[in-house]
Length: 292
Picture 1 (cartoon, rainbow, N blue to C red):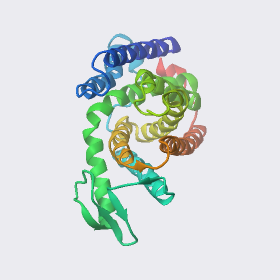
Picture 2 (cartoon, one colour):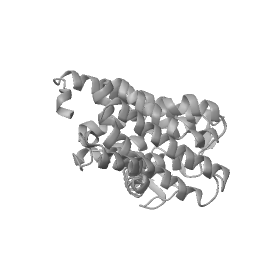
Picture 3 (cartoon, rainbow, N blue to C red):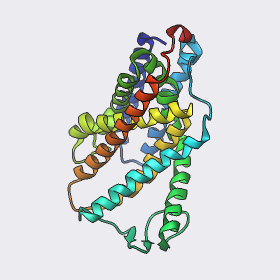
Picture 4 (cartoon, one colour):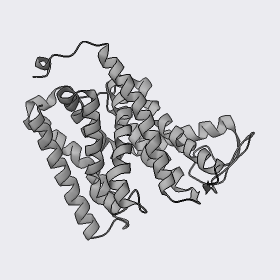
């Protein structure tokens, strides 16, 4: 699939997403109970569009990463989300930037008093608490696949491979991450993710964070041969990461949390970029004829 077809796909994906988001904002609003169902539908629009390209544009069928792939990579996205989440919790509590009524940490373990933890609440030794976090995160990530797979089949399973072949790994993932961020633009401008700083969040923080995340998701997809680990990681980010961090009671501006999550995503993304670049140098360059 050439650059014109990629550009057409991106333009149509933006048009569909922005039209639905703008209609939602101007009718029932972002805070209405029905809005979450509409947003799940929005998340499936790029996959429906991808299926249309696969049906009517033969070159689009090359290089799909839709199979289950290497199952050993599936848990890594959940571990990533848990690591980012509890690094943020530890830092903010340690610095006095937040309090929480969910956890009381000590050298012996954690007293869990809030949250939907599947292995229960109460005083837990560290091994039980870690198991509780991982089991709960994995379960909620799997439940969120219903929505996350709608985006990730399109971004990682379909579009990423075509963009990498056209632009090279680094440029392709930067472009894809930036596009992914602007695909959310109407919601971002309404303060959906950055209510205190919607302009900074929309045009700086969100693009940087999603470019960083995209390099991690790209690494997962390429190494596993499947978009499913990225979809599970996306589900974990939408559940365990957002859920726990949103329940911190900040004593500092919300910008601190946004900067931490953006910085962590960029740092991990740079490591994954280096790993992907190193892997590509070790392999012979694929012939474009192989994708014709």
